[in-house]
Length: 342
Image (cartoon, rainbow, N blue to C red):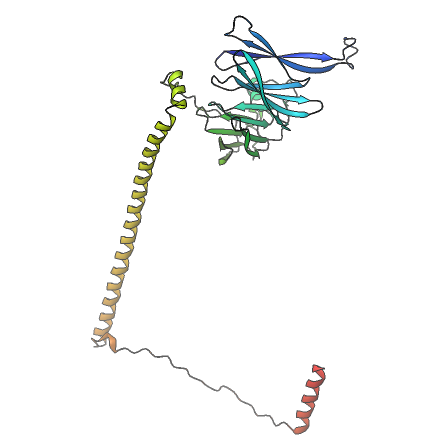
């Protein structure tokens, strides 16, 4: 069962079998498993249960979008069309099939706490097993490729596809702007061994990597819980729907002012450094002139321009030899040169 974060809906996976002739413990060859979703509308008294068909496909994890949009995603595997992620929406007490994200071989689906952005991942969720000591699948709960895809459900576009090999956990920040993928080790091995790939990677909601943090021993990652909002949900919805542009312009002005102040501080710092360098070079110049005057006083010369700097080239013959060459020797050298040229 998968509850909506606000408790308005609950989705239940129901197993069915096709081509089932004789169902017993000995004959399980003839059965083919597929799933449907029974959706319970908690606020609807007339018809609270709705069936959602998946076209004879097996269903994996189901994830509800936070908020009141009524959208949810489910991972399905069809025997002919292969793996995919399907999007549905509860609207006016009816379930609408939105679209299908094909060729997504994953085992984890996670929404941003603010909605709209969906994480489609494939990894071994070992952190829950580490904490609960549940080794029912021999320490494996799915594929461990570490593939990540950040998907924008509103625009039906993939923002980025990347990987974090050996990842064991996925954690959205409470604000919904950041996401962390972590690699943790078992508690039983933490005091005995160290792992080089332990740590976590910080991403933004668009799938861009921000930073990496590596540790020899890393056991668990948790975000600090965010305090509840001081605004009512209705006011937040009104701000996002109508007053967003107004508040956005106001906060952009504040950010611009902070940026200008920070830039002015940097300019002041640079001006101070330039002034310091000019003062230093000026003081060294005065010091050099003072040394020149001292040298002149020692040699009883007051005019520093009296010194004339010239460059002279001196040539000196170190050794010379004379060799008498006959005419026959010259002809012999010429003939050898002509032979070599040919």
